[in-house]
Amino acid sequence: MQQAEKKLEDAQKLARSNPDLINKDKLDELQNAHKTAHESKKEADGKIARMTEVIGKNKTEYAQAYRELSNLRSQYDNLMERIVNRMVAERQADYKKSQTVQATGIVACGKLTVDDCKEAALKEAERQAIEQGAVVVVNSITEINNSKLTRDQIRSSVVGKIESRKILAKGFVSDDTAYQIKIEAVVTPGVGRDLLEQMQQTARFEIEQAIGGGV
Image 1 (cartoon, one colour):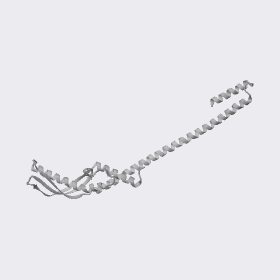
Image 2 (cartoon, rainbow, N blue to C red):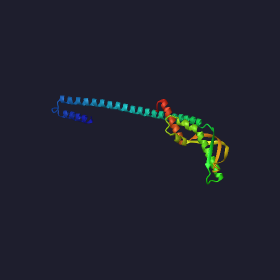
Image 3 (cartoon, one colour):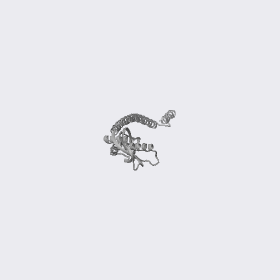
C-alpha cells in the first residue's frame, strides 16, 4: 500500500512538472486505482481486526471452558474417591464381623521336642481357625462383579486375627507320634492390600456403571 501511494505521488509530481507527459484521464485513472486500493486495504484491515477479535474471544472462551472442565473433573474425582472409600469401608465392616469357630491342629512330632510339638500343633489350630473365619469373606468377595482375582488369590489376600481362644482338647495321637490340639477361637477377618485395591476398583466400576461413566 505504501508503495502504491509512493507511485501515485511520483506520478502526480511528474504530471505537474510535465503536463504534456501524463494526460488528465491517465492521472484520474491512477487516482481511482489508488482510492480503490486504499478502500480495499481498509476493508481488509477491518476483517483482520474482527477476525483477531473473534480468535481472541474464542481463545478466552476455550481457556475458560477448559478450566471449568478441569475443575469439574477434579470435583468428580474427589467425590468418586470419597464414595469409593465409604463403600469399601462399609464392606470391610461387614467382612470384619467376628466369628466363633472351632479348629483342630495336628502335627507329627518326629524329631521335635514335646514342647515344640505342642507349640506347632497350637499354631496349626490357630491357622485353621483363621482360615475358617475367613471363609465368609472369601465367599462374599468371590461373588463381587468384575472381580479380577481368582478364589485362591482372594483366599491368600484375606487375613485374620484371633481375638480370643480356649483349648477344648489336647493330647498325643497316632501312638504318641503326633500331637493334637482342638480350640475354639473368636476370629476377626480382614483384607490385605491387593484385595483392598481390587475392592476399590470394583466399587469404582459399579458406581460408573450406575451413573453412565465418568466426566
